[in-house]
Amino acid sequence: MRNRTPQISLQSAKTSILGIEQREFQDRSVRKSRNADVSGVIEEEFGKYLIKAGILSGNSVARAFPKPPAKTQTMIADAVGETPAMAIEALKEILGERDRRRSGQRRLDGNSGTHVPSEREYTEALRQVRFTPAQITMLRALSIAGKEGLTVGQLSQAAGHKSRGASLKAFKKVGLLIAEYLDLDLPETGSEQNDGAAQILAFSHIESDDEPATWIMHQELRGAVLSVL
Image (cartoon, rainbow, N blue to C red; front, side, top):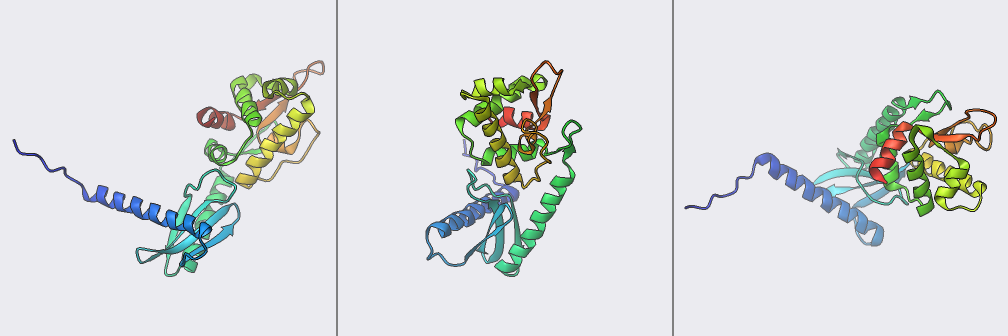
């Protein structure tokens, strides 16, 4: 019996080469930040992105990554040009269009008046932003609570905080971190309970004057938390 030679399609070969080149460029970009002697790689911040450009296999290529202190350097978008500088300008156009498209797709929440990011946006933010264990616990607890929501006291208990004030402060911080990563405009602040940063995560619901308000997580964020955290 003759051994059969594995068949490799032209498409799979191209894909493999592209993957190798992508890793090669990313490795060179990372080395640039560690070794100033590496030539041919340009770094430039653009909004929430870090752009790295250089010559790869004879082509001028620019690639965008999450800006530090993001947890990973997953490539977000790339572009080519006649020179690295031109590739950077082309990439900026792509990133600008990406942000405009995302902004236009956000849902207006009728309860808080907040433009809520999509589940995909929340998912990206959760994968990149560094949260404390207590903040992660709060996100998980609120997502599990679903449409019933949790009071500030219940959030405080879940996170192990000694005071509701500390819990609310930590909750707002999560909203600020996500808003900063996604470059979101914070909703106008109503009261301390209905803070704009907190509204990035949830909306406040009051059943009656005799009962404390509950925070109900936006369904898009709930899906992202359940899939990422």
